[in-house]
Amino acid sequence: MLTRLISFNKYHPGYFEKVGMRNQSFCPTYSLDKLWTLVSEQTQVNAAKNQSGAAPIIDVVRLDYCKVLGKGKLPQQPVIMEAKFFSRRAKEKVKGVEGACVLVA
Image 1 (tube, one colour):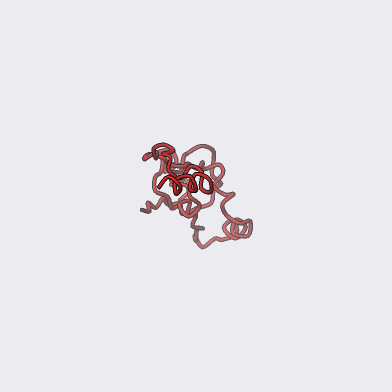
Image 2 (cartoon, one colour; image 1 turned 90 degrees about the vertical axis):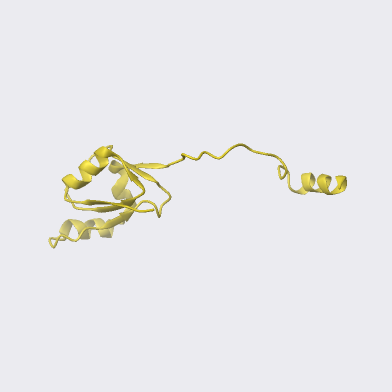
């Protein structure tokens, strides 16, 4: 048994050690002022020209973000945002530009 432990420590250092506890409330955030960097330039141009009311859908969960914060300004273009959590100010700003906030699991 000791030889197995020695070989594990030699070839897989840190295998038997505890490295800490997992943060249960970890939630990466994203601000509204950086929101349009998630969308390609072609989509931004099409959204600006579009008069029919169709809005681009931005899914921040797909990019490993959890919560959208209300820092910054949004352009006067409707947008549909999908996230797990929204701050109160983020909801107000998105609805102010005729957009929608969609909660996803």
